[in-house]
Each structure stands twice: as C-alpha cells, then as structure tokens.
Length: 357
Image (cartoon, rainbow, N blue to C red; front, top):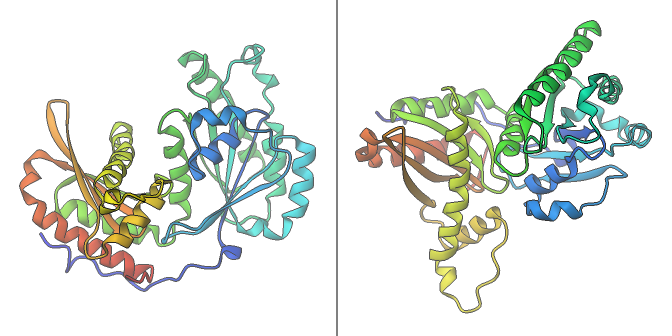
C-alpha cells in the first residue's frame, strides 16, 4: 500500500529563533547526577568522565540547534536552594518559555536516608514549582536517577511510591494544572535517553501530525514499530501510537551507534589518508551527507526475538533525523515498497517543517 495518497500535511511551520525556543529546566537534589545527565545526553560525554564533573554552582545553559524539527534550550540549575532563588530571579523574564521541568531525585543509597522517607527533601521541588507559576502548560518530569545503584528493587519501589504520592498530593491540594510523569533513569543504559526523549516529544511542534505520519507508515507497511530519532543526541523525538516495548526501543537506540560505526568504516572519507577524527554521531552523518546527497543513508540489522526474526531498518529521513523501523520477517520481501514509503515520509517532513534539500 502506498503512502503517497494517505499523507497530506496540513500547513507548515517555521522554527522560531532560539530566544523564543522552549526551555527544558533541569533541577534536583544535591549530587543527584543532573550534570552527568546533561553532559552524557546533550554533549555526548563518556559516562566514565562524569566522575570528574564539578558541582554546579550557577545556571548552565545549553542550546540544542542540531535538530531541524525542534530547537530548544536546556538550562541546568544549581542544587543549593539559595543559589536557585538567585538564578530564578535572573531568568524571571524567560519563565513563560519554560515548557519542561525535570526534577532529579537520587536513588543512590547513602547514609541510610531511605530508612526515613520524611528526610527526603521534596520542599525544593515545591518551592521551584511556585517560582514557575508564570509558565503556561508546564510539564513536570520526575527522574529517579542512579537506578543502577545498590538499592534493592523493593527499596526503589517504596521510595518512588512515597515521592510520587507526596508530589501528587501537593499538586492536588494547590490546584496546579501540571501534567506529570515519573521514570527511573541511569546514564549507564538507554533509560536516560528514554526519559529525556519523553520530554522532547512533549514539546515537538506538530507532534500529532508527525505521529499520524508514522502511524500511516507503520500500517501501510505492516511494521511492528516506527521511531523517529535525532541522530545527533540519540533521542527519540516521535514514534507511532502502537505500544512501546522498552527492549525494542533499546535495540533501536543501540542500532544508531552501529550504523555510524559502519558509516565511519565504509564511507569514501575513510579511504583518504588525511581522514579527520570522527566526532559525535551528528558530525559523522553531516560529513557523510557532504560526500553524497543523491541518496539517504540506510542500514539494516536482522535479529531474533522470541523465536521470531525482525529487521531494524535505519533510514535517514532528513538532516540529523532518521526513521528506525522494526520490520517483521514476513515483510522482508517488501523492502522496495518500504523504501518508497520512507522517501514519502521524508518529503512530508520537509514540507511540514519547511526543510530545504
């Protein structure tokens, strides 16, 4: 079935300047690991180098401008509440741009604090929410970070339940209309990318149109699942509406690393004796695009799951954006149709977001 007649984007948008772009504000407990989150996800720092990061003592700003579908700012607040109050006075003119608040609680088991949940400081989050009263349509995402640490699963469940109940009770009592989600994260697996991805998906312009586009692709080609990834940050910015399996997401996320390792090895750039050092995934694909703009980068990986074979098919839709499709074995012989429909998805995205070739 062809997508050409099914997908017709309604209108277009142009991205705003970075001054007007949405802000993702990251805050949390002392030594909760929020600086590591920012550096690993948005700066592609090795997780092992995060041990040497200094404590954040002032507002840190990072701009994500590599994603052609979405531009946003990431601002990290210090952990000390006195410093937070000072910084919030400085950013008061920009509060209306704050779209996401990520608040990080540490699951690291230290000084037996989990024996007495009343010692867990949620007052910092409550005070911060009151400072953000001017933010319209604010979304709160609570990360229970360092889930790889020594707490047992039962301890983590008990701790998370207590925090969730406390936050939900506060929001209900204060009559604050804030959407909230909770997730456990670690920089040592894909859970942190999954958590940040959910935040980014929340602020994607025309996200319903993009999801409808991916739904049509999935249904037309009988795919198991379709993801749209930002290859620069490895964040999933959209997916079709079928239930998401964490194991599938993890495999698709990891496949991006595999694809760019292959790009690095087999690109014609690799044949040059004065080959420059390869940087982030986004830099690798940018250099590959300079070599050949006639056809998108594609790659496929076949794997077996529960005695069934699947193909992870990578298709570069537009600059720094790739579709990663999970295809069942019975559809392996339909690659011609799948590639054609993916090319139509690429054209629709360019039209929807006014992207030039």
